[in-house]
Image 1 (cartoon, rainbow, N blue to C red):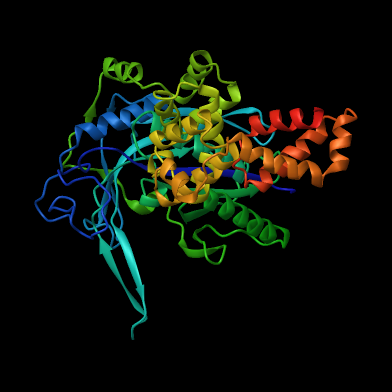
Image 2: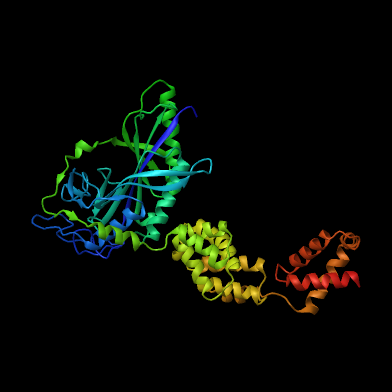
Length: 480
């Protein structure tokens, strides 16, 4: 591509607090509309906001986890705009003095080299409500508003325009999600809206220090959608520039069904919001000691945990990196080890078959019905030679989908491993008689031929034969 891509991301993260940012309404995801509301978050006249101290502590933890400079003095502003999901007609945010600024996190660039991505600001703000659109009717449909989310405690994390590809943008989001989860700031469940991302993207000629005209992308509900929407708009902007025309500053949304970006509106600039200090909220005043305490009290983060996995469990660095990239997966792994202390064996199954099923289902490890106790039960059955490794994969798949216990799946499906010598000898005799050429190859010194014979026995028993016993019996019969 003859253009350089410039991407900056604005990420909204919902904090894990018991109540909303400025009122005592529960801060939790519920399906029933408008049950977690009160006069404060509905913007009733005379209802006064009061800052949630827990939310401030969470935001402070996020700022120090992202290596930010923390403002000891900051305050809240009113960001004025009219939209049905904002009942007050303004949003309480930190426009002029963010809690955190000038931070960074590290990712791998397209060449696999370490790259530092700047964090311009981390500020606290309240969430808006959610519009629910219904199609049909004489007027073409209707829209309703669910205010359960209104007033929810958010931090907005704004990156510098340091990202140069959709792949880098995705890796940035994955790293940011990991940091927020490890710090205990958020569960970052995109499907519930606790992590939402807007992207600003523009193109310029390589070597040019000025920025091109940017567009803003919204409505991206997965990392994959972020990557695809960025790729789509990069190509769209390139076509416009190639034709000699100019890119127009717009806000676009990603349409998952049509796999394309669609224009929503002209993009608003900072001045359009007419921000001013909120007169009903006191300033935030912190001490240097409070900031340092927040930094010292950060939980064990991903890099530290990966080092511990190598030192404590003897795992390869690759395994440790994969397992600790997600706090949920790392927790799952260590929960398994509490009752089955074979780290490498557990690592192989958690990173391999289990993670594959998680990815296919779009789940985190703590959302799966296949618990660490289930994994331990499965691995113990392999160790006890109740089932083979091959059958175990089938059991895991069935248990993952059905929610049944692995041992119950084995019993119901008749998957117990065959270790009866007389039963196996009869099958082995038949395999030997049906494969005389392979038998002679083995006798002639070709060791790989034995593997073919073992495979034939496993096929005849639907993978239920004890592989070790099959090997022993085959060798004994061929050499007798």
